[in-house]
Length: 127
Image 1: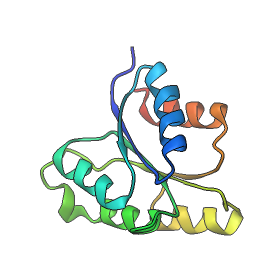
Image 2: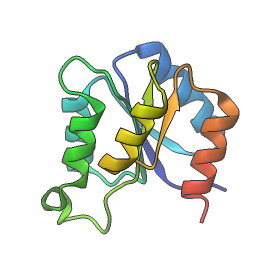
Image 3: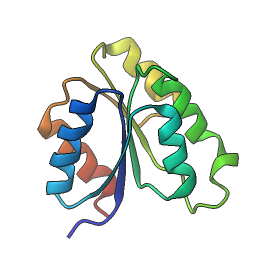
Image 4: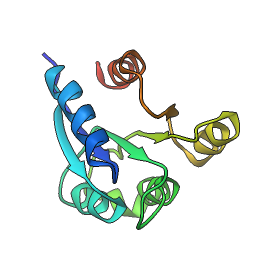
C-alpha cells in the first residue's frame, strides 16, 4: 500500500482532476491547489511528500513556487521539503535544464503521459 501526500498545483482544473484521479487510484493522498499562492498555503499547513507544479500559473510561475520550496526558512517545522516536479506544455531541453538547475527533480511535458508520471512518482516516493 502506498502512503504519502502529493500536492498538485495547476491552474487548469482538468489537469488537476485527471492527475488527482490517476494518483489517488494508485493509493496516494492528493491535495490540490489552483495557483501558487494556494499551493504555499497547503505547504504551510501540512507536510507533502511531492509537489507537482505547472510552470505557467497566473499568480506566480512554477519556478517562483520552486524557489519558495527550496528556501529552507519555510520548512523549519517540517522534517524535509518535498521534491518538486515541474510540468509545462512548452517543455523543451532548455526549460528542462532551467528546471533542474533551479532545483526541480524533473520537467514533464504536458499533456503528461501516464506512464511517465506514474514511473516518476513511484521512483520518488516508493521507499
